[in-house]
Length: 437
Ligand code: 2PG
Ligand code: MG
Image (cartoon, rainbow, N blue to C red; front, side, top):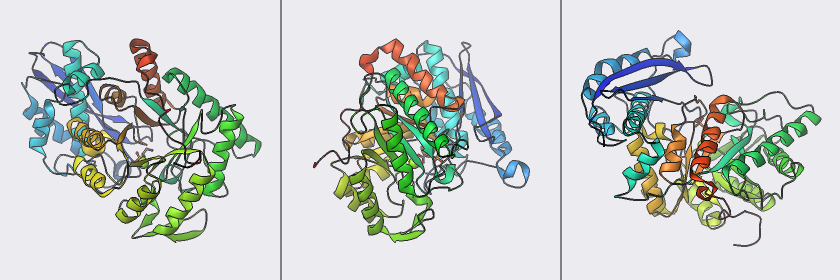
């Protein structure tokens, strides 16, 4: 515990990986400790997630954050002033008193999340421990004090809202489920990324990268993209499924609503049952171990039917569907929709609420994946959350671009400190076409 008080809460405008303005908050304590947090930003957003405060109007495409910076100076900083942080998440109570709306519509989710992260880091600096360690200790009375180095879920091809909707599927990723350390998982994934680049170059289709650093998706159909990913795994010399499996984020809310799904690249519109059939064919044909948002956020029946059909075989993650919200996770678990939750702190608005969502998923016996956003920065706090909360999986986009590699490289350092025995391997993940359940 620290006796140090918050002396200053300083906001500033910084830039994210899409060249858009975002908020950094710096918190200084009376003992000289300092913590910083930067708000990330999503492009494919769930309708119920915390809302970023942006200025609107002409400047910077309406995305400027001047109002949000002013709110930190005029409302947040005075409320936090002189507070003694009794734990890494102690400031969240004050933030939640200032804004108790589910979508942070008073202060803005970017204001609350950047402040929440900064205070957590300031606390960790004051007690002289890594943030993951204080988060694990903080969770001890109520939950899981174990720490682990998470299994990476890494994008090879980008798509959907992150690639001008060139293909409909948003993230074509791999999980090195045969790896025994994060160091090895990253090296295996890098081989697949390079092999995928060579395959695209051979076709004359290597034209750059999407928002999260995955190769640009120049494909003839959505299935062609999955097929190419399978070829890349094989070309890299790995047994597809066993050593390296496919993971998809369909992000279906981006092209589906009210039970209708418009697959632009495949030039077809299908209903919820048609979507479940199509995904089922992919799951039979390809070694897929995890699928995120297979149906749209308004398609509860579809999500239940899909979970009924596939939930015993593969990981089914709710992202836009659950928006890192404990109550929505409780309801989905009770209704048999999904078996895993994506945990994005800025969907919830504070680290405490993200932790509660993770707790709800754990209570339901679900797996959990801490995740970055498509608009990111050098902030690596999500690594501390995944390690300290024992989430066991981390999704950050690809293995290129500094805002992504900042996270992977932080995991390598943490693994050196904790040892490879702390690595949460993926052998428990089942592969969709590896025989009957
Ligand atoms: C997602 C994320 C990351 P965004 O949908 O899971 O891929 O994208 O941050 O745009 O919501
Ligand atoms: Mg998603």
